Amino acid sequence: MNTPTSPALPSRTRLLDAALQVIRTKGYTATTVDEICQAAGVTKGSFFHHFKGKEDLAIQATLHWSDVTGAAFAAADYHRLPDPRERVLGYIDLRAVMLAGELPDFTCLLGTMVQETFTTHPAIRDACNAGIEGHAHTVAVDIAQAQALYVPDATWDAQELALYTQAALQGAFVLAKAQGGAHIASVCVAHLRAYVQALLTPGAAVQLAPPVPVGEHIPVPASRHQGDTP
Image (cartoon, rainbow, N blue to C red; front, side):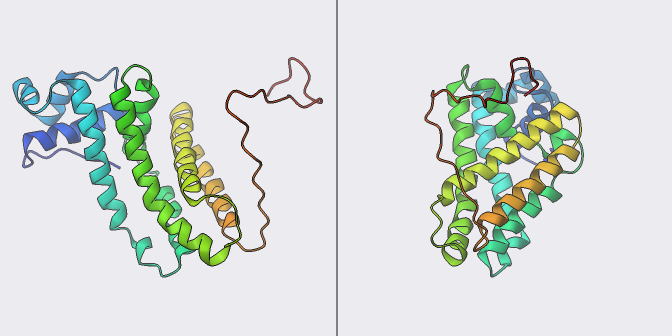
């Protein structure tokens, strides 16, 4: 989601908008305060008037990102669909349509930053997590309604499935960055749609394997020989 800065906006908003774009382009670590100021068209003094430093800006940028993207999703047409399953699939369809432009235009600020900062900047990590979980919750509302209507006996959890949609999307962004284009992300989102649709289809009999406890060894199948390509 592209968020260009505008000279008509207050300097704080311009700095936040600039942070969204520059960090998605270069990553948090490589981004400098000078670059953000230049992109926003403000002085460094103005920056430090609004923010204590780059980490403070990054934390505030996660909130700004959630506000901007949250408003965009809230206004999306799929919310007008009367069927909750169609709303869930409409959300995924919208995510597919959004895979346009250059990589920084459609990749996620939160996913970009948390991969770099999860051990070095726990405050940024927690802010990113809050943003991702908050967005997932809005998706979970429709998933829960669709589950109750179409597959009331399903044992999977709506919030966990909503978080899975975010995991699939973030993974799609990573692959798009690795391959230098959006095609693979489109393929991943198509698979996500098919899976969620199957889960919400009566009689589809999608079985979820029980999760492996964290830290437990997963045995390699006997057919896998040492040296085989995974």
